Amino acid sequence: MKRFAAAAVAVALGFSGSAFAQGVITDPNLVTGCLCSEQAVAALKDQISQAQQVYDQDRAAVDTLDQQIAQARNSVNVAVRGQVEALKALNVEREQLYARTYDTDPRHLAGGDQGL
Image (cartoon, rainbow, N blue to C red; front, side, top):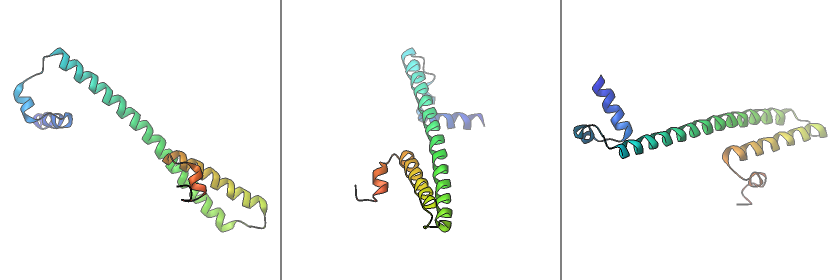
Protein backbone atom coordinates (compact mmCIF):
# COMPACT_ATOMS: atom_id res chain seq x y z
CA MET A 1 0.00 0.00 0.00
CA LYS A 2 2.88 2.38 0.78
CA ARG A 3 4.37 1.76 -2.66
CA PHE A 4 1.04 2.54 -4.30
CA ALA A 5 0.71 5.76 -2.32
CA ALA A 6 4.26 6.80 -3.18
CA ALA A 7 3.70 6.01 -6.85
CA ALA A 8 0.40 7.91 -6.86
CA VAL A 9 2.09 10.94 -5.32
CA ALA A 10 4.91 10.73 -7.83
CA VAL A 11 2.49 10.55 -10.76
CA ALA A 12 0.42 13.41 -9.35
CA LEU A 13 3.55 15.54 -9.07
CA GLY A 14 4.70 14.60 -12.54
CA PHE A 15 7.72 12.52 -11.64
CA SER A 16 8.66 9.60 -13.81
CA GLY A 17 9.71 6.24 -12.43
CA SER A 18 13.34 7.20 -12.97
CA ALA A 19 13.02 10.00 -10.41
CA PHE A 20 12.77 7.42 -7.67
CA ALA A 21 15.82 5.57 -9.00
CA GLN A 22 17.86 8.78 -8.85
CA GLY A 23 17.32 9.20 -5.13
CA VAL A 24 16.41 12.15 -3.00
CA ILE A 25 16.88 15.65 -4.35
CA THR A 26 19.31 17.52 -2.12
CA ASP A 27 20.05 20.63 -4.19
CA PRO A 28 18.68 23.53 -2.08
CA ASN A 29 17.82 25.56 -5.18
CA LEU A 30 15.73 22.73 -6.62
CA VAL A 31 14.02 22.13 -3.31
CA THR A 32 13.29 25.85 -2.89
CA GLY A 33 11.96 26.05 -6.45
CA CYS A 34 9.74 23.04 -5.85
CA LEU A 35 8.39 24.48 -2.60
CA CYS A 36 7.70 27.84 -4.25
CA SER A 37 5.92 26.11 -7.11
CA GLU A 38 3.90 24.05 -4.67
CA GLN A 39 2.82 27.21 -2.84
CA ALA A 40 1.87 28.88 -6.12
CA VAL A 41 -0.19 25.86 -7.16
CA ALA A 42 -1.93 25.81 -3.77
CA ALA A 43 -2.78 29.51 -4.13
CA LEU A 44 -4.17 28.93 -7.62
CA LYS A 45 -6.23 25.99 -6.36
CA ASP A 46 -7.71 28.24 -3.67
CA GLN A 47 -8.57 30.87 -6.26
CA ILE A 48 -10.22 28.28 -8.48
CA SER A 49 -12.17 26.86 -5.56
CA GLN A 50 -13.44 30.31 -4.58
CA ALA A 51 -14.36 31.15 -8.17
CA GLN A 52 -16.19 27.81 -8.49
CA GLN A 53 -18.21 28.57 -5.35
CA VAL A 54 -19.22 31.99 -6.69
CA TYR A 55 -20.10 30.46 -10.05
CA ASP A 56 -22.18 27.70 -8.43
CA GLN A 57 -24.05 30.24 -6.29
CA ASP A 58 -24.69 32.52 -9.26
CA ARG A 59 -25.77 29.59 -11.45
CA ALA A 60 -28.24 28.49 -8.74
CA ALA A 61 -29.57 32.06 -8.54
CA VAL A 62 -30.02 32.15 -12.34
CA ASP A 63 -31.92 28.85 -12.14
CA THR A 64 -34.14 30.25 -9.39
CA LEU A 65 -34.86 33.37 -11.44
CA ASP A 66 -35.63 31.21 -14.49
CA GLN A 67 -38.20 29.30 -12.43
CA GLN A 68 -39.71 32.51 -11.05
CA ILE A 69 -39.95 33.99 -14.54
CA ALA A 70 -41.57 30.84 -15.94
CA GLN A 71 -44.16 30.88 -13.15
CA ALA A 72 -44.78 34.60 -13.57
CA ARG A 73 -45.26 34.23 -17.34
CA ASN A 74 -47.99 31.67 -16.75
CA SER A 75 -49.87 33.89 -14.33
CA VAL A 76 -49.16 37.47 -15.43
CA ASN A 77 -52.17 39.54 -16.38
CA VAL A 78 -50.95 41.79 -19.21
CA ALA A 79 -53.75 44.23 -18.45
CA VAL A 80 -52.18 44.92 -15.04
CA ARG A 81 -49.18 47.15 -15.61
CA GLY A 82 -47.65 46.34 -12.22
CA GLN A 83 -47.51 42.61 -13.03
CA VAL A 84 -45.91 43.31 -16.41
CA GLU A 85 -43.32 45.62 -14.81
CA ALA A 86 -42.56 43.02 -12.12
CA LEU A 87 -41.92 40.42 -14.84
CA LYS A 88 -39.69 42.86 -16.72
CA ALA A 89 -37.74 43.55 -13.52
CA LEU A 90 -37.19 39.81 -13.01
CA ASN A 91 -35.94 39.53 -16.58
CA VAL A 92 -33.51 42.44 -16.11
CA GLU A 93 -32.24 40.94 -12.84
CA ARG A 94 -31.78 37.57 -14.55
CA GLU A 95 -29.94 39.10 -17.52
CA GLN A 96 -27.57 41.01 -15.24
CA LEU A 97 -26.85 37.96 -13.11
CA TYR A 98 -26.43 35.79 -16.21
CA ALA A 99 -24.02 38.33 -17.72
CA ARG A 100 -21.95 38.40 -14.53
CA THR A 101 -21.99 34.61 -14.19
CA TYR A 102 -20.93 33.94 -17.77
CA ASP A 103 -18.86 37.11 -18.25
CA THR A 104 -21.13 38.36 -21.03
CA ASP A 105 -22.16 41.85 -22.01
CA PRO A 106 -25.80 42.27 -20.89
CA ARG A 107 -26.52 44.40 -23.98
CA HIS A 108 -26.02 41.30 -26.12
CA LEU A 109 -28.57 39.42 -24.03
CA ALA A 110 -31.20 42.11 -24.41
CA GLY A 111 -30.81 42.30 -28.18
CA GLY A 112 -30.26 38.65 -28.92
CA ASP A 113 -27.36 38.12 -31.29
CA GLN A 114 -27.84 41.46 -33.06
CA GLY A 115 -24.88 43.06 -31.27
CA LEU A 116 -22.49 40.23 -32.05
